[in-house]
Length: 224
Image (cartoon, rainbow, N blue to C red):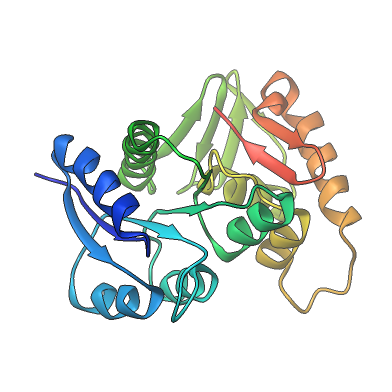
């Protein structure tokens, strides 16, 4: 079965160039020249992935990403001519899964899309099953965590934090994004709460704690 993509890019030459590469890899491609058209198409068709340019007329990529993420967990790759950390953090906080800067290689973009889909399909397929990363095992049904067969005693928040990081495997998550998602928007603590819990979680996981990587000036990423 073919995968399908919604490609949102206002530069017609770039859009055609990217489309050609995806079609060579047997993807069905639906094109939109701006954010407004993209949202209209998204309501009408079913796709497996959204590749979304940020700087566009009518409606830029930020509100489009936000609107899509309110309705769907579909993978989103954002592309932009700006490489600033703030832009990347904004994209990830809005729910983007990947971030690619221009000038980009369509060949590399397709490769990233294929890798993202494999990772997403793997996670969805085993969501209610045993999650295993080397010696680390998480049983979602029993709410238990083991390392090398040894049961690890995690607090409820440490368990929720670990699951949240695993759910977003490969993504850089800011401390603010983690705090809001795991503790809730009404929580009155500061960002150091996240650092403290990550530190404790790593210590309890032992060697498997290295799966939780620190991304300097950005946040954390779970990488298997």
